[in-house]
Image (cartoon, rainbow, N blue to C red; front, side, top):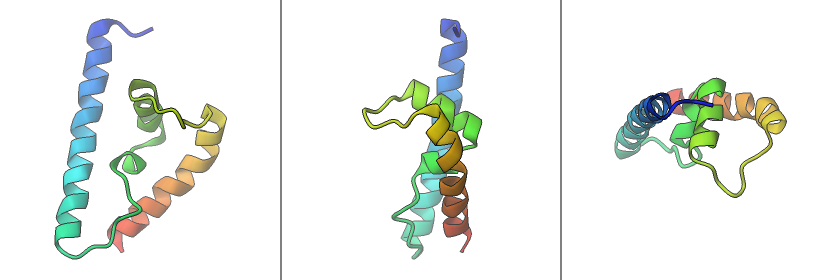
Length: 84
């Protein structure tokens, strides 16, 4: 279990990364990019995405094994969409 300070550091770091990705996506959208299928959390690494799902749980969160199998494809598709 993470200590409270470590938990806050991880959460703060994820918030910073997600904000940067969200700003990138918004900038590209304003300049004509079609990125409706890209969410900031899809641009995270797998390890960071696991942290994201633990820190910001949703009702429809997939099981860890399913995430390990599906997320790399979702992540790759999102990055390809951002660059092309």
